[in-house]
Amino acid sequence: MNASPDAPACLTAYGIALGSNVGDRLSHLHAALGALAGLGEVTAVSPAYQTAPVDCQADAPAFLNAVAELHSALEPMALLEALRGIERGLGRPDRRPQNSPRPIDLDILYAGSRVVQEDSLTVPHPRLHLRRFVLEPLVAIRPALILPGFSVNVRTLLDLLVSDEPPLLRYAELAGAGMPENLAGKWVALMASKPAGQRLVCLTAGDYATARLLDEGGVDLILAGDSLGMVLLGYQDTVDVTLAEMVHHTRAVRRGVKRAPVLGDLPFHTYTTPEQAVASARALVQAGADGVKLEGGVSMLPQIKAILAAGIPVVGHIGMLPQSVREEGGYKKKGKTEADAARLLADAVALDEAGVVAMVLEGVVPAVAADISRAVKCPTIGIGAGKDCDGQVLVTADLVGAFPWFRPPFALARGDVAGVMREAIAGFSDAVRTPG
Image (cartoon, one colour):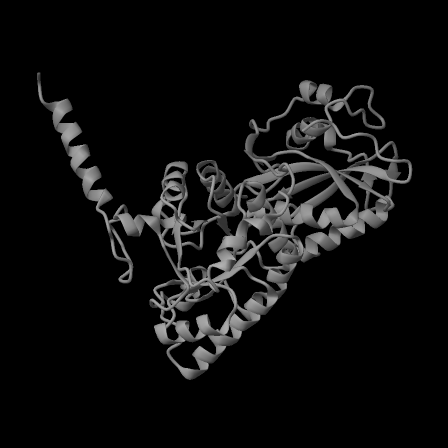
C-alpha cells in the first residue's frame, strides 16, 4: 500500500504494531483493526506476515504481525490506554507472564514527529529498528518515513538490519478495496422468492471451478461454507477452519461467480463479540462475499445486529450447529421435544425480526422446520430438515459423490465423481505402466 499522507495538524499520525499468536490470529488482527477505526482513521495497513517468535519461550507458536497507521486526536498516553482496552476486549489479560502467547498485542511505534518518554511508554519504540517483524510491515506502508532520532528512512533501516530472525512469510492481506456498495441489492431476488412461492437452490463451493459450474447451472445461492474444512482440507469437522482459510476460498469462489449471491461462512470463534463479528464479516466481504452466515439464535443477536448495522447482509443458521459438534458430542437432531421446538421457533422469530435475509435450518425435525418456515417472513433453507422449507442446501461434494468416505443420510448423491475419478486414475496408471 502506498505511504499515507501526513496527518492534519489537529491529528497525530501513529504507527501501531499488531501481533497475535493464539487462536485464529487473522481474526484477532481484523478485530483489532476494527477497534482502531473507532479511535480515529486507519489510513494504511500492511499485509499480515507470519513471523517466528522473538524473545519468547522455545515452543511459542508463530505470530502474525502487521503495522497500521492511525490518524487520531488522542494524546499518546490516552491512546495507549485505549489500546490496552482493545487488548482486554480481545481476551488478553492485564497480568500475564512476560512474552507469553497472546491473542493480540498492540504497540505504539511512533507518534508523528513527537518524542515521548514516560514510565509506561517510549516513542518512537526503542526496539523498532532492531525488529524485522516490525520494520518489514512498516516499510510496506511508509518506506520513506524518517522517525525522530534517526537520520535515514525506515527502508534504509531495514536494509541495514542485522538480525537472526528468519525471513517473514507474507500471509494475508488485511486491507481490501473497501466495502462494495449496495450489498443488499444482491439479495432482492432471493428475498422475493418466498412470497412468489419459488423454492431456492443452494449449494456449496470452495474453489473456482465448482463455483463457476454452480453459477452456470442456475443455482440461486452459492455458499462458501466452512464444510470445506472437511471435504477440501481434511479436518474432522468444521471447528478448526480459520478465517484465513475462509478468506482464501471465498476469493476463489468469487472469481467463478458472476450471477448468484456468494455467501461466506464465519468460522468458529471469529464472531465471539459484536466487534470481532463485524471485523470478520468485513474480511469475507472484502474477499468477495455478498453476505455472511453465522451459527446461533437469540444469543447471537448482538453480533447479527452489529453486522447488519455495518451494511453487511446476514443469513442465520439455527438447529444443529456444526461448529458446536464437539461440545454436544456429535450431530444431533433438534426440535424433538416441545421445549426444544419452542426454543427454535423463538430463535427463528428473533433472527427474522432482526433483519436476516434468510436462515438455514439444519438437522431440525421436519414438522418443526415447517412451523418455523410459516412463522418467519424471510426464506428458510433446509438441510436435513424436511421438504417444507423454502429452499434446500447441500454440500456439493455430497450431491455429486465426490467425498465417498462419508455422506449424511439425508444427502442423495446424484453422481459418482469419486468413482469416475478412480476409473480415470486407474486407466491413466495402466497406460503409463504398460510398455508400448
